[in-house]
Length: 300
Image: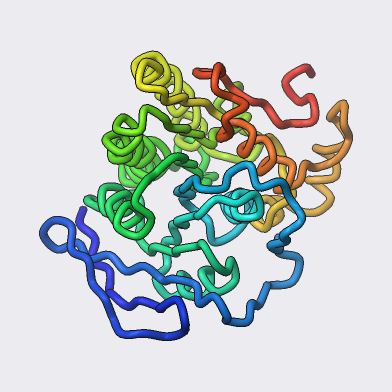
C-alpha cells in the first residue's frame, strides 16, 4: 500500500507558502507548523495546554502518533507542557493544521496513515528535518476493531496488524539511526489491557495486535539497551475517551467501572503522565517493562 499526501506548510508567523518533502516514490509529506501568535481553539472537553509544569523535557524532541484526540493528544500536550518539541502524527490531512494550531508553539503536525507504505520513514525524516533530533517516540496510533471472531475478514485482520503492530515496528526502526547517534532514546508503545488478558470491547485481531506489541517491546528492549535506548509499554484499561464512549453505552461503562478496585474510568491525563515518566530521564534503568493503568482490573 502506498500513501500520497498533499503538501502545505504553515509558517511560524502565519500561513505561508507550500513546502513539499518527498521520501520515496509517490510519498509526499506535509507538516503543519503552529503559528506562534495564532489563537487556539479547543473542542469541548478536550485536554488543553498549560504552562504550569516542570520543564524536564526542555531540549527534547518527541514523536507522538495518533495524536488527534484521546491518549495521543493528552500525551502530546503533557510533553509540550514539560518543555519538549513534539511532532504529532494525524491520519487526516484536513485535521492536521487544526491540531497544530491547537497545540501551539513547538508542535509540528504531520498527516499520514502510519499503516501505509513509506509513512513511518517519512514521519521520522520530516521530524529530523524540522527539529534536528529525535529523543522520544510514542507509538500510540491504533485501530480499535470490535468485530466478533467469526466475522473478521482477512482484510480487516491485515489492516489491524498493519496499524497496531507493523507501524510501531517500522517507526521504531526509522528513528533508530538518530537515537543511536545520540546514544539516547525513549520508545513508549501504547498497548492495552487487551494485550495482557483479553479485550472487553475489542475483537480478536485487536487483542492479538496489542499482545504482539508487548512482544515487540520486550524484543526491542533486549537489543537496543546497549545504545542507551529504552523500550517500554503502557497498557491502559478502560479510559474515559471519546473512543471508549463510542464503543459502549454509558450504562455499560458504569457497570464495568464498578467492578474495578478503583471503581471509575481512568483519565487520558493519568495515562499521559505515565507515558511521560516512561519517556523521561528518570526511567533510564527501566526497559522491557509494562506499565498497567487499569484501576486494578488485572487483580480481579
